[in-house]
Image (tube, rainbow, N blue to C red; front, side, top):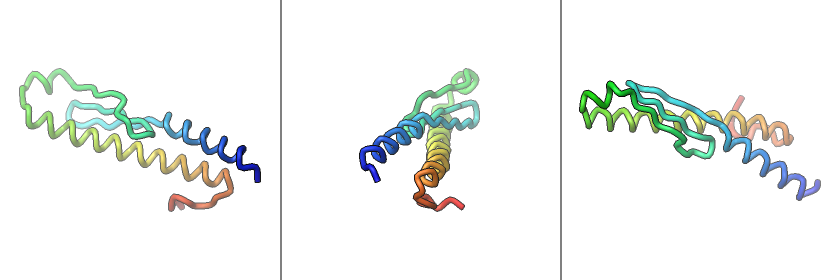
Length: 96
């Protein structure tokens, strides 16, 4: 097995996984996270801001951010499982 080739394939796979995006919406707020678990964007409906409910908005942001990150983790896990199978590594991530 050519270690340089394998390392190149792993780096390509990591780059592909970083491109994964997942969004989560809750109560007028949408958060988009990437496969490398970075928040890409936050969108807040103007009606949420106009109501002036600071605590509610904070709660919604928390739920939406965690939801987006959870979805991104799930997408990365699904894609990583497929990549692992492609490398002949079997079921490394517990997907059936």
